Length: 293
Image 1: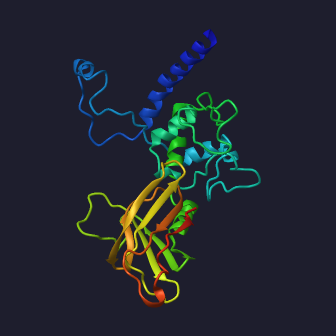
Image 2 (image 1 turned 120 degrees about the horizontal axis):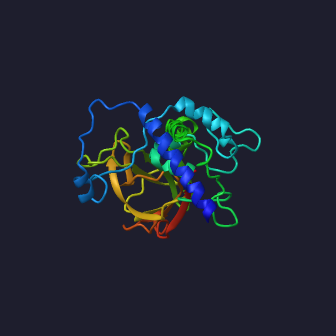
Image 3 (image 1 turned 180 degrees about the vertical axis):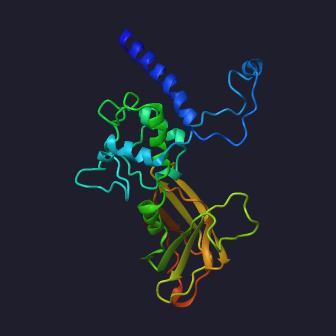
């Protein structure tokens, strides 16, 4: 216990000593912040209203060198900087394109306290239930931590975006009497407009259903979509008949999580009378799944 307290005091001393250096090196804002009195600070509970700790800006180039020095690539692949070679990048999640998905403070916490948030997945958790990622608080100065986070935050696009766009490419299957094509438009994509413009852009899921025998669109089907992702709870939504720039389809304004892995569609029995040779062909529900990886 005494040894732990000594290490904690030493760590705090390092943070207090080097934290000022890191902050002093950060670019100064155009206008100084408005000072707050000690009395106001105490009345607000010890911190200003709306306060949130924000990591100062760092140097991504220096952070890249730190990433290499710490041999982070042994667990985390980064394209094109640190491609997988041999056994590299086989343990932790790939970091390509990860910078745009989390705030800087989340990455900083993951580096100095990897057990704060443990990612569920094979190889991420040890036998003791803790994260297998090492604790780097004794390996980095505050200035180095700031630079390393700046490098991770700079990781956008690349292979991650290419992979994501592949998942968004139209997918088609034939099941029962139907030929079904699924398309997804990212939030803000051109041509996505249904009624009033939403305050926050959303994606749009489109399902095109045609008679497999004639190729003609099949209307009046009750269709539901079940969306499954790695970290979010499964979501089920009902699709509505729509006509837009892409033609007649069943759709819903929805933003699919980046970690979506499967979209399952259930096509119910036709809600209109069928006649002639088509009688009975559309009377049975059909379920089909599309992998989204």
